[in-house]
Length: 95
Image (cartoon, rainbow, N blue to C red; front, side):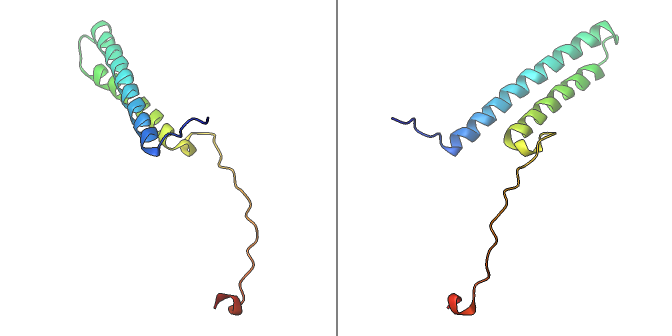
């Protein structure tokens, strides 16, 4: 037997779930790196935390954008399928 096809709603829901998980992981890693950099290098300033968290969120956004619209990925081309020439209909065929 063939396996049942996944509905488009389930595919979109899985993509959103992956995007949300990716956002949490990358923002968390960015936040962690920012805290470490803030404590060690920048005398407990807050801007390294905000900057690195923003980098994580931006990377997650770019990955999510690529998963929903793969044509936007750099270096990809859409294949152009040549269409067959369409012959004009005569006025007698339209009636």
